[in-house]
Length: 139
Picture 1: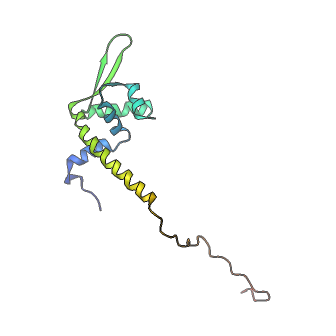
Picture 2: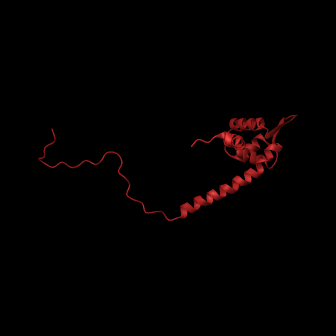
Picture 3: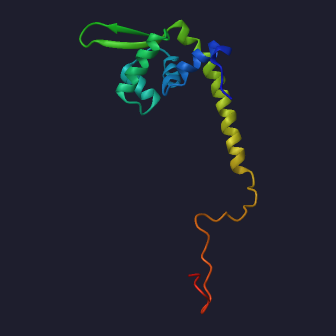
């Protein structure tokens, strides 16, 4: 079944932003306050500089992140959430709660006794039948 994005344009718009790798983690990291580029990279994990820069530019374009440049040697750049970006806080809490429930369900599955396994189906060619001595070869 194909999902029609016109049914819920708000959900589609949010997922367009959040479904990209690192985006949710970056917004969540900035929820604690402004951070510099390298600090953001350290907060979210093994993200490359190029990807971090791309995601920050996208978030800035969506109006979720504000980039502020402080002059003077050395030039300092900080990223902070806008009011719209701070609105993600409640969403992050809900997603985190759902994630914990998901992890709990996975743990229960691993602890549940496994059903008895049936013999695996043979793969590939069927085994050759042995030929009887002196039997015709079929030629």
